[in-house]
Image 1 (tube, helix red, strand yellow):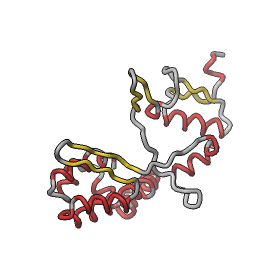
Image 2 (cartoon, rainbow, N blue to C red):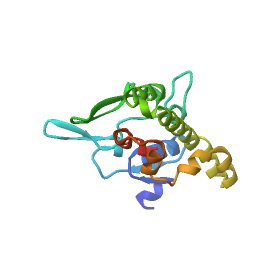
Image 3 (cartoon, one colour):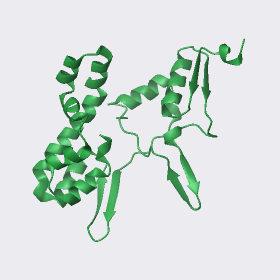
Image 4 (cartoon, rainbow, N blue to C red):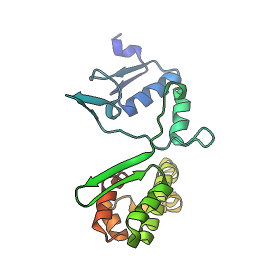
Length: 199
């Protein structure tokens, strides 16, 4: 018997997905081997140091946590994996800051309402576009977490169109085309393009 035959599952890569898969399998009773070639686990959720500076690899925020009273998808996953009490969460009050010399310096707060207010304050002529765009973003986020996954599981295009119509309509569009549809101010589009393409 080879060493690998001792395991029910072998997971290659200890990034976020690999760690989640391995923990889920192990909690379900499977003898699981998790392999990682780097000297630390975490993948995109790690950082590295160059000189006096520490750089994040990619993941700098975790959304979808919710609160204890109102848990959202990530809190549910952490609870199911049995790690909720092993992780210390730091609430982020600012989503991001963008500075362009001689043009603008704007910090967006980490809340839908706060973002709307700051954008309208800085770009009052775009108020309706901001409201429409932010509503679209909220809908796409919720539909991607809820309706899209259910439709995918059921392999149902009808369910996708019924429960995730905004996600389906905008899912294959470029961030630029969505921004151009809602806004004419180039500074506003630049500010939003830095982050909102993730949606």
